Length: 313
Image (tube, rainbow, N blue to C red; front, top):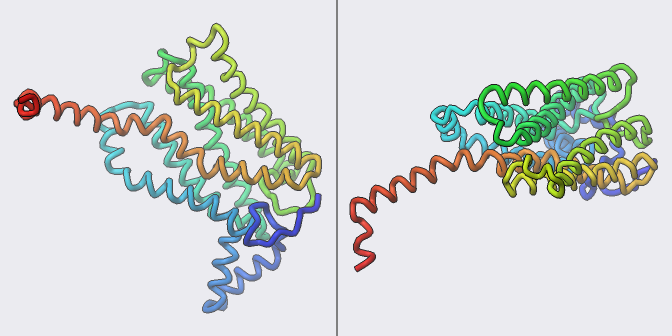
C-alpha cells in the first residue's frame, strides 16, 4: 500500500520518514549542539507521523496530566478521608496509565528510529495494556451493580480483568517478539496483512462487547446495568470508537490509503481523550461530592442561625 505524499506539516498519517536520516539528525544535533538543537526538536515533535499528528497526541495528554497534578493535593485529601479502596485503586491506576500514555505520545519518534524498536514495543505494550485494563475492569466492576462494593468486589474485578489482559498481552508478545509482527510500528509503506488481521480481531472483540452491553438495555437484563445515564453514554462512545477503528483496520488491510488516515484519527481520539472521558464520567463526581456536602452544610448552618430570615420580610 502506497501512501499519498502529503506534506509533513499537514498530515496526521505517518509519512514516509527515512529512519536513518532522522536518527542521524538527532545524533548530529547532540554532538554538534547550537543550530542543530532546533532541528532535533523539530524532528522529535514531528516524530513519524507529522507535526499535527504528534501534537494532537501530546497536547491533550499533557493537559490532562497537568490537570491531575493541579488537583492532586485536594484529591489525595478526599481519598484519605473517604477511605474508598475502589476509588483509591482507580485513581492510582489513572495516574500510572496517564503517565505511560503521555510518554507514549511524546516518544512517537522511537518507532522510526533504529535501535529503539525494543523500547518502543515495550512502552506500547505497557501503555495499551494499562488502558485496556482500565476499560475491562471498569466495565466488569460496574456490571456487578449493587453488589459492587468493598474490597471483595474490587479483588474479584481485578482478578477477572487481570486474566483477560494477561492473555491479550501474552498473545501480543508472541506475535511481536516471536514472529516479528510490527504491531506498534507504522512507519512502513507496505501493509502487513497479519498485523492488520490481528488488529481487526482485537477491535472486533471490543466492538462486540460494547455492542452486547448496549443491546442489554432492550432486554430483560436491563435491570442489571448501572442506573446511570453517564454509563450508557460511555458505552455509546466506546462502541462508536471501536466500530470506527474496526472499519479503518479493514480498509488498511485491504490496501485503502484512507483507512490509515482514519485509523490514526481513532488513535488520536483514544490516546488523547479516553482517560479524560473516564475521569469526567466516573471519578469527577467523587472528588466533587465532599464540596457539595460542605456547601449544603454551610447553608443549613447559616439558615438555622437566621441569616436568610431577611429575605422573607
